[in-house]
Length: 218
View 1 (cartoon, one colour):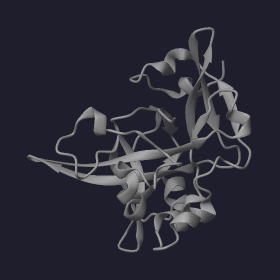
View 2 (cartoon, rainbow, N blue to C red):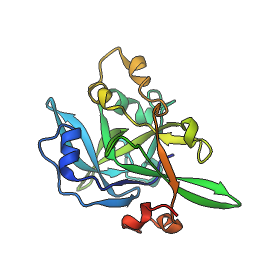
View 3 (cartoon, rainbow, N blue to C red):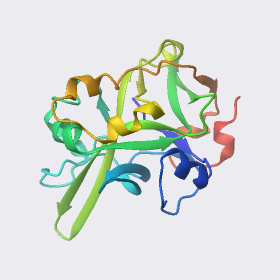
View 4 (cartoon, rainbow, N blue to C red):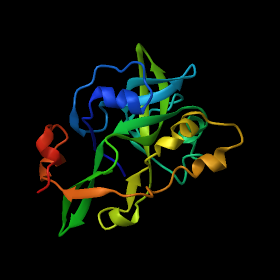
């Protein structure tokens, strides 16, 4: 799964990589946790647009925002068939900018946090889905991160990882084409290129912890 990540890349770099004209006000974050607002890039009226959406997808048909409907991850293997994700996969896709993410390794009954980055990319993108939910006096736009099998280098830490979309495939992911679902599912594969990883302090285990020291190797 993917339960924590970081985004501290300068806004001007994010705008350039994701072809954005505008960017909402964001602060460097080193321990982004579920249920908080996260930066999401969508295709709106033919242009890339960045907004802050709640991390934890609530399907539009949910009668209320129950925790059982607040889904932080979607499995690549079932994202096109599972009822809670199927319509979003067809119509509401997004990219979620990140510059690193955390996974936990089970060791002697404890969970040891590791931080993972892509060496040649200052910022990259998770494959995501989004939805729009309306309740009594409340509207929530929410998102989820798609996960897949871990790549070889990461498998000794965890068996799953977030889907990372190659930059050349940004448009292909953001703009679904009718009848091309099977080919588009091929984008939801383990990362094929180099990654870097190092162990970090258990301070990151606390969802409210923040600061650059969280990503430093120990």
